[in-house]
Length: 89
Image (cartoon, rainbow, N blue to C red; front, side, top):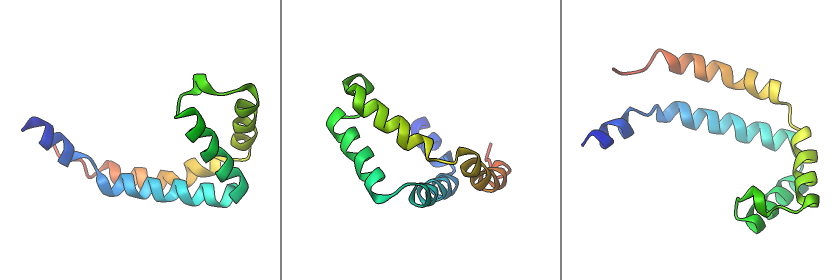
């Protein structure tokens, strides 16, 4: 029963808002080809970084450099700040 209480205490709306902001940021920052390449690499490696070739690692690094992480954090900050005061105890 304690597990269920913990599950319900998760701020689901906050998580969905952060996911929405992250997806929006990725859609604006990366081209369709970049997103497809990342998806292909993750599928081929089954999510295991040890299975990446040197070229795949380099491709992922190049794609990651296109992301504006400072802007992503700025866009997420309002959702995080409004979600902080809503915790149940």
